[in-house]
Length: 263
Image (tube, rainbow, N blue to C red; front, side):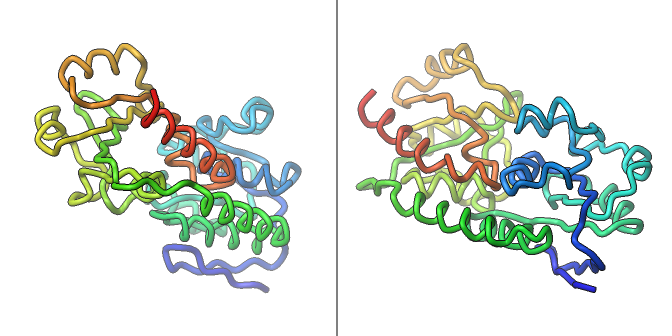
């Protein structure tokens, strides 16, 4: 019997290496794939779009905030992987009364790396997980440092506009790009106005592809209201997916820095 403590401080007991895993978190689903756990993962959410073949072929158990508990019970999982922020507590609590549920809670790079290590340990893929962690750390260390932080706002939603506060993974990724979050005095995902963005002297406004899918038309409309601010559409997965997607984020951040400086 092995006991594992998750990132919320809750412990689970596993008598064997899990072979019927259900993932309720898109970024951690992608991690499980990259750890080589194709046979062990039996079901995922409809938002687990990477890899495409899993999205197409694996059993769909609903949305991250609307999992179909009856469907999960019918699959008899021996491990459920969830996230404190992305999943509904009441649903995870109910599932936890029937199955081992390991819950991540991530607001920065180091917590994300610890999650990868823990998942590797639980699934008997620790060697792959440690190699992945080493590569991620090396690539993040190579992201160029910018002289003078760029005053930045990152929007995840419109009507109302919503941004990321200082206790989020997005905030940590912005800092690693050399971008200063102008809403770092707030927490979670506060609503903001165009006037606030102006008053905080925003130099760079990043419009995320998720959860709201900002497009060029939104950037153009905002540009008329913020003529002195550079506005760039960005891949939200690079800023908010805290699994193996982090292998690719540093190169993306490097290109984004160049786009801000030279375009």
